[in-house]
Every structure is written in structure tokens, then in C-alpha cells.
Image (tube, rainbow, N blue to C red):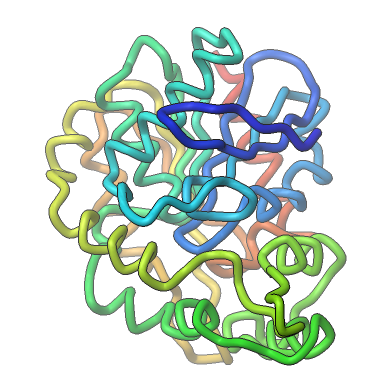
Length: 282
């Protein structure tokens, strides 16, 4: 299932989960990798559909150039991947940052993307508030820990997990890790890559992209706390509903879990079921 393709001068890694039509292109979050969708795949997205889970440039096992992290660059990589695989059409399933790349793809290439499933995301999240909420996830990128055991122990203590853990989540974090020559370990993604990406996010004409999307859209909203009880969700219900009405054809649905845990365990079953119903609907 683990494959590579050379596009736009770099090597992109992806997981090819076999299944039926249509093909789903799974786009992960800002600091995430293709294995963030392992829970959804295990919950039934594959083999019901062929599912291509991508490591964006700068993430996972994909190449990590020194620069080139604009929204259009990310979108161009996805288009080139589909071209290499001779896939004329696909359904976008984007989580968080991945959904924003989905906005660009769906707006600029309506003939290639027939539907868009937004997993707990909105252009309204591009704010200093969100940067503060995801600080613990961003901070891990620069941390060096003495061993894989220490790294995994630190990940289990992430405040947004609130004690939650399962095999798929552990797989995601193991693929998030790289081992240095001195034996220490740290996240695959460099902080400078994320900093450049965030700068480009703030400069993008998101309202224009949203207005251009005429395809059917599903917006899944995880309203559970992103942290201990009482913490706010990443995407509030108000923000999600405000986003949904901006699309020409959008269904809004709340889903169990928070911004991360909706992808894993029992929550993943509900998320995968909602996506499946949306994809097969006439």
C-alpha cells in the first residue's frame, strides 16, 4: 500500500488502500501524515472505496524541500499525483488543513472533484486563536527526545488526547517520528515548513475559493473539547454553521470526538459512515 510518485520535482509518498469507485483522496492535517486516516480506513472506507492517503510535501515520507509551501503548490502535487495514476475524477476528503487544500482543488478544478467532504475544518480557522489552540501539536515539531519510547510517552500526554489512545493512533505517531544520527528522535516535519505554510494560509483568498465551489459538500463538525473537559473545540458549532451556508450545496453534520479523536476508535466508525453515505448519495 505504501507507494511513491515523482511530481513537480519532488517525491510524494502515499498509501493506496484498494477498493471500489469512486476514489477518495484523503488529505491530512497541518502537521499530520497519511497514517492519520488509518482509523477511518479500518472503519470501512476501504475496501468500500479506493482510498489514497497522501503525505503532503514536507510531511511523512514525502520529500521536504527548503521552500515551496504555498496552497497552490500543495494542490498542484495532488493534481499531479492523480494524473500519474490516470485518475480523471476523485472525491476529496480533507481533515483540517487538508480540507483547505480541498477548497483550492475543488474551486479550481470542478471537473476533477465531484464532491468534497470537510472533516472539522473551515477557512475561519485561519486565525491566531487556532494557532494558540494547536500550540502543543506545533511545539512537538522541534522537540528532540532520547528514544522512541520517550517520544511515544510524550505523545500520549498530549492535552488534546485527554487520555485517549489506540493502535491506529500509535501507528500515526510512529510514522510521524524520525531517528537522528545521535539516537534521539523527533517529528518528521520541520517547524520552518509549518511556519511558511501558515504564512501562505493567511494570504490566500479563501472567500473566493468557497464561493466558487458548486459541488456537493459535507461538513463534519467535531464539537467535543480539544483538551480537558471545558476546553473549546477547534471548530465551534457557530463557525461551522457559518461556513456551511457559504457553500452552494452543503450538508452540516455534527460528529463524535474532537478535532483529532474523530479519526480514531469508535468515533472513526461514525465519521466513516457519514462520509460513506455522502459519497454514495445521488
